[in-house]
Length: 397
Image (tube, rainbow, N blue to C red):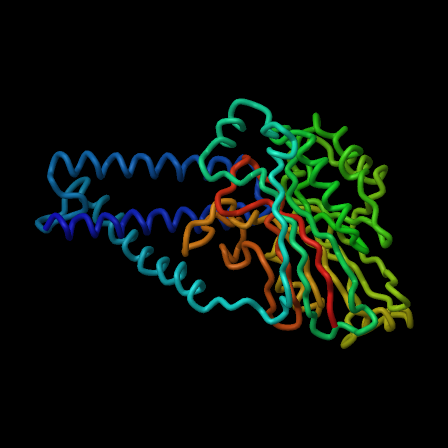
């Protein structure tokens, strides 16, 4: 009976954990009041601790962890209901975790992926963190927060004209400038990004969330220049700033263009294409994209409707929107690759309405290829089996 009891306890707590992860990912995927999200996180954490304590006390007192027959009275109802819900959630969650790993195949759109690893701690000669909590987290065994992965990926895009073959984009995301990581961490990162010599450079949001780091923009973003320009959208963490205008001004002074809700027409070797930005649901509005199938505009709109198009967004949750508007390529971040990736299971914490489905990497569904960056940092400097990254994407016809 003890073995059965422990099995039921395992299934119950696994289901409870899965339900908490599911809720956490969806809460952090939406534009909700920060206080509400913060409170919900604390309630889930406190509830989990109390439930674990109840099971421990129950096991010691009654030598039974879930429920073992007899009449259901008093507090037994809590255990029966929680166990039933936990086991049901577990039976749903386990296939959802395992099946994607079994069926996943690297999309044919990814032609090549070369990677170089730079140990920034060794290169800088010190641990690039500041503050007691950050230093403690940085010393966790296996923490890869300072092992920068520099990827060069070749992507074959659907409907991509041969005139644009070879166009290169340096893709960064999720810098999270808070002061936990030192300025020289970001300086080395932008130096490495500049050395990739992309035709254009994009940053997919969550740039800075502490006013004290505003002077860092000139010393990091100002280091990089690309022949076709530098573009960014904001993410959800910029909402933590008292005002967004000072950051926007600093980025503009460094030569960067805010694409949120905007579309620009660029030229590469005589072939034009569209670059659009969508920072919803946190900033701006959806960019107006001419649809070749339902035009009600000028001749210029008609010509632009048929141009190849690339979308810069913060969250991969906008992938269906990009597919509906027939973007050839979408670039996103936000999920940090999960930050902690378990063997075989992979990432669990991934703030998206799709959960871990688009945590990081290359995806090709429908008419659109999407690249989701693992980003450079996070709210806390911890990365297990999930190095920070910058990526140069070379686009192939």
